[in-house]
Image 1 (cartoon, rainbow, N blue to C red):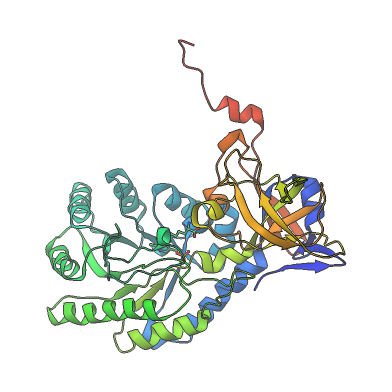
Image 2 (cartoon, rainbow, N blue to C red):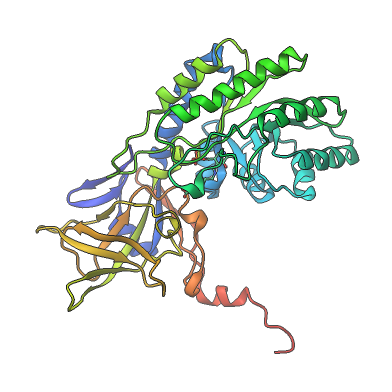
Length: 425
Ligand code: LLP
């Protein structure tokens, strides 16, 4: 579900024409819909509120890594959303956007001592510990500050899932979390320290998961572990269920379960434990709230019959197709009449990897036409770079008839000025 629709033959983001935006901001550019962000958050919030007994006062901690734009975060912050963060930079963004520290979870497999100290100092809700060695470091950092942060132990349940091997995190060879037995021992060890307070368990088994079975199996592991820890006299009051629920990318064959079914499943598994649940959705909130707007530079009709649609957006702007073979539906902003023909959709970067799609049937397109990649609101702009010295792609937020540039495209002068010349050159 999203708010990008044709109005009088032209694709709009809510009430704003994408042609207007392309003229005003230039292309390529990311365009986000506030209404879609609000809708997705609302669906999940309502679903979680429906199960107060099983999920407690559930926290929805948006995974900032999916789209960390300050205005996107501020839109969610105003709805009461929390944040799942994996670096000091993300914590700073969440705080700057108005998300209270008490709704911020700090996760990640390699937090530095100074990041841990920062998280303690600002008073995040919980630090998710991912290894024995990290627990030792946190205890030392907390002791030096006479602090006692709340922690959860991230379990690796040996259940990996997700849309691609590179985004599967719960498998036994993946770098994330601690195996079950070790996690139980670590929890007990943490409980003995006066410098940390273990409050719960966490897991996150992968991303773009399109069936409930692996998620349910992982939540059952957390449930069993909770009972085991309690039988050993330990307190477990929170379960952090991670993110990972897939989204219906338009045109994709698999339709993932709805947020309501996902949350109902979690409520079933956690029923009777009396814990407070946390969800860490990233893609679910942001993916379909954004498009990448691009202009056709030219159509190369080669003598061997291949037809290349060359766009001004490239892999440096939207990396997912090159990195994960991801498919993002391409739509013309003002569709022309005529039969569809197959195109290879490519960007200008000097690599064959800079190919968005092969033999994609598309309606007639010409140089100068505008197109959008759908479902690009999550893991799009955040993964963009300046490869081939292409300026970092700007971002625009739409809200009804209003719009604002929420990340500015750097000028070439600004890009060059970031690189001071070595004084011997
Ligand atoms: N929690 C933790 C601890 C995570 O590592 C992640 C994502 C999430 C929550 C949010 O997962 P989501 O709900 O968005 O599936 N760049 C990749 C996705 C990487 C996901 C990494 N972890 C992509 O473009 O598909």
